[in-house]
Length: 383
Ligand SMILES: C[S@@+](CC[C@H](N)C(=O)[O-])C[C@H]1O[C@@H](n2cnc3c(N)ncnc32)[C@H](O)[C@@H]1O
Image (cartoon, rainbow, N blue to C red; front, side, top):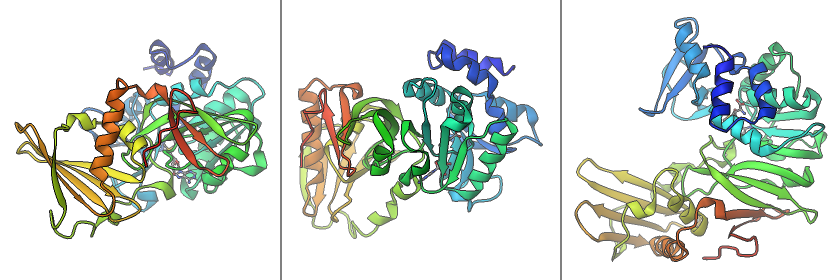
């Protein structure tokens, strides 16, 4: 494969605009990948180690594939060739990189802040397009910063790469015309709003703790310090370090199942709850605040959907058995989480199951977040 081909195929699927095509050709992803990478196999869901020295052809194939490539596990604590537990740095999927740069809508002379430097490839593409002096990128991990700086230098580019917590932005380079975040965010930090000029755009994968899923939201910063805009599409990023959900916190919520939990029945099906990339799951997360949700499935055709409150020790579990028309609900604690989820799904169904693109987000100067349907004035209120 030549380095032209990835750019051509991204253009064919509409991710790459003509303005970005030359940039993608000039700044190949291969320059930014370490010798040992873990290529993500979309069919098996497994991360497969590939070492350039052992198998240069497989490494090239991985580098040019339209798939995410993990470059660090467990914040660098994991060593060796086997995958670690949590993927903590990566080169994002080229399709996602290209389409986010398209949505960022930059033009000559703009200043851009990136949060999550990772390999440095995205910062390199921005630097090539706008000039290195117009790009700053913040990365939390010291080793990742070093690798990115080396790769950028090798590519002849010199954006400012800062080691720090991207939640603080980078005030020295402000104001920015654009902020692009390449990690999943659960709370938009006020610093990003403060450091973006009015009329500027913050493009960020945002979500709730209800699921791992993020949705890309394009926020325009207003004169009054608020930022607001629509969701564009579902994505899934590794989360900002301080905003990962620690599932261990739910240990001890359910000392004995079902214990003294209140029991009821529901006609809602497992499919109604929505799966990966399906709006039902994301919308339920918008409507049921501070709730984490996971489904445990068994080979015997039963599935248990769990819901945990992040602010009290309330929990709910719904047991779905194949062939049975109703499921059994268990709820415990001051919050009735399942009732909230059911209400949210009914609300969504009554409105004709609006797609993600009809929802949006407003973030206040203090970081307070409100989700809305169709218009910023139509805030979702369920509490
Ligand atoms: C998906 S990778 C970024 C991919 C990158 N833009 C590229 O072109 O390769 C996410 C990165 O965000 C970094 N990160 C996580 N939390 C962060 C934080 N609070 N501030 C800055 N970077 C953070 C991770 O260390 C990781 O390198």
